[in-house]
Length: 164
Image (cartoon, rainbow, N blue to C red):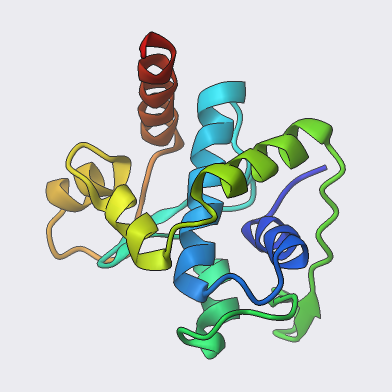
């Protein structure tokens, strides 16, 4: 079953209600997507690409669904906008694959204690896929971050973890 950024976000919100801001959620979904690419060679979010926005990697559908929360903790599942008629619809987190659930639990265990700003700092470091995409195209908006670049980045992180 295909996973959307909103389904992944709703899974995290369901498991940790009121603990996640929009910024933190955006980064957790991106980091989860990266680790899934790095470990399993396939995208976690399959219906859209992450984009390099000024303040970091963003899944646009998630941004537009969560912007109303501002910096407040998100305490309810978010809705997606139906492409056919523009009506908001609830995307139930139907993540049944044990590998995906284990990965999301692992990402929460490793990153859930960090703030959205901390996670943003991690995704903005020199050499990250967002940084490279942003530096190669200064001032351009909404650039896709290639899944191949994200996968390579997280494979390197995985490799360096194995060496330590």
